[in-house]
Image 1: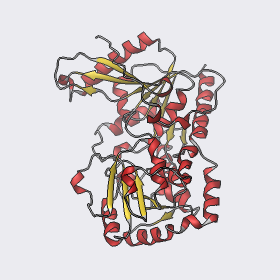
Image 2 (image 1 turned 180 degrees about the vertical axis):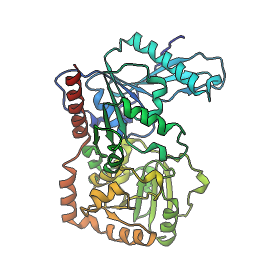
Image 3 (image 1 turned 90 degrees about the horizontal axis):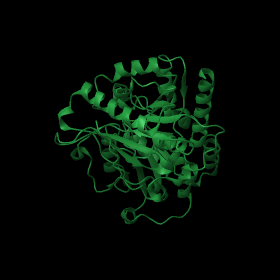
Image 4 (image 1 turned 30 degrees about the vertical axis):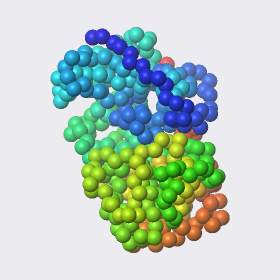
Length: 401
């Protein structure tokens, strides 16, 4: 089975956050990190990118994405290698169309391509870091020094989740040395299934989003939108409460709703199309502070359904770091701690949400709110999260040396 490296040119420096650079150096080398993810590295900059970019500053990181199926059977299975920030390598196995839908054969082909790549790259001392249990099919026969399950979401509750996901997760629980969770609600569920689970809620890059507290050039596609502006950024999928968005826009034509992010898994035709709703599409991570700087209120417009039961939205502290007042639906990991600390307003209905936005429009003048917000934000960062994770890895590596 031939191995080819279809290397792309490295992304522009502006394509990904430079503020991730100052992670604290570690005294000795960690094993190579092999990360198995369901998210494309270049899709939306979130938890995997924050953590893996920090690991890449200390050693080799290989980010294994889902396979790419060709439209024909002419291609033989091979590896595409894309280099990203700090030398991190994104690995994509290319497969012929005839393997599509044949799960066992697809997993075996990926295993063989990965095995050959590991051998050619001298990857022998490594740990596995999983974001999806489905990756076990192509990786269960390797022998990593450590296995980490970083459970950032309850994937089984998401739309179009593979039927085998829950069974694979149980297998991963048996293999994992640690289970990390993306929030406290998820931790409460997963600690019942693994003896060494640790909560690592969504964190922030304060310096990056703090740019929004200073004057910034207005993005061209937002400049012509009137104030007050009520914003949301994130993936627009089944988690977004589009009915709530439509009700708010209809009840408050004096407000302009700015919605940023890719639309996935839902029909574009279902999105509310009021004149005061502005869908600006996907934006690069580097661009987000400039958009936030021009908002009057930031929102978490999440629906109350199975897919949101365990989420811990990264955008909560990001909005606050940008100095924006925040209104959210009652997501548990937003209510605790942000709602309980009176840093974020919580509203369950369209009427309550409208009243909360009215209050939030004056909140930037509240010096006590800003002080308390900054005191809380001083206790969290992606650097701190990464360092705490590394400390746990070192403890386990030392115990098994």
